[in-house]
Length: 125
Image 1 (spheres, rainbow, N blue to C red):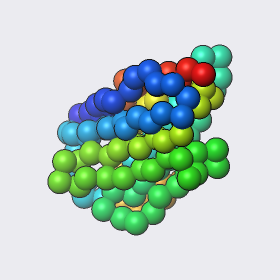
Image 2 (cartoon, one colour):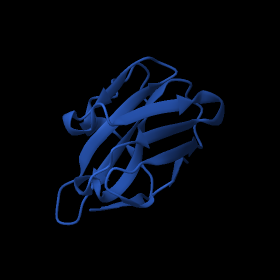
Image 3 (cartoon, rainbow, N blue to C red):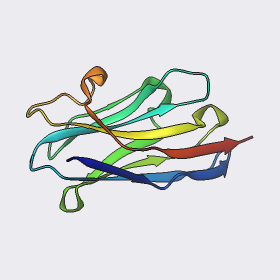
């Protein structure tokens, strides 16, 4: 059974930074896609960034380009989301997601199948 465990959330002031981690376990796929989504209170969940594990593709929503960076450590089956220049609109629960089809496109957001429990990010002004 696939498990995705997020960590690294917290509270920061506007302009600050955080780094989220998501460790994946319980699968045997060498190539798959992982992503970060977020959901603010009263809003729909939205994709933030995705990455092809052991691949080169990444994808970002426009509002985080240049501020957020998604990366991977394949030895640890872990992805990261470095978030810089945070602002209050980034406040949300951040969820890690994965999909295990070989050759997946990380930017096709609707096909992610497995989800973590989430980690809260709060940015104060």
